[in-house]
Image (cartoon, rainbow, N blue to C red; front, side, top):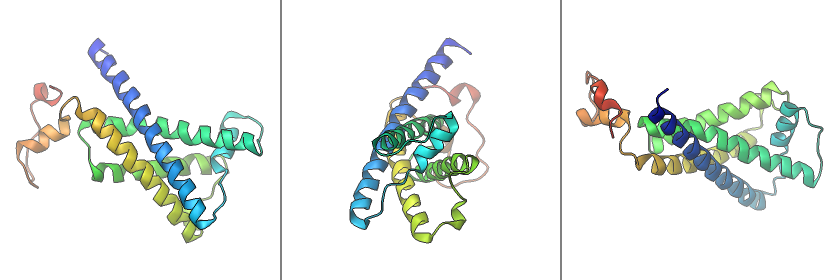
Length: 184
């Protein structure tokens, strides 16, 4: 890997962690607001997943809340790196954030089901499923907005340069020349 590529990757990682953390904070605030309105109790699924993944003992009370928040923010920051990669490739905007929301939902389900803490979403009560999708959409949209802003400082991504060759919805548009794909 060239020195320039390594620097770019560090920037993508840093920006993704920032964007993912912002999304996790927004999601947590939205959850707390929703819980006040609906009376829904806290879910300790994130804490149980982290405890099982790391082999730590199961916590209760305030300690469980700390583990829960750690998993929320940590997982959000890590998954945010993928959204940063998307933004740098030129996948930006609301459509890309909605695609990313599905990734976040999928990530949750993989770790929850693999550890035996969760069950497949199609078995959940519809209200619980709707609440989870809503909160993950908040995460996806906020993470996407921050990732897009940070990535846009470097100009359009390769996909955006390709789309700009022939504006509008067109087929048969060949790729941009290799030397222009990553130029800034």
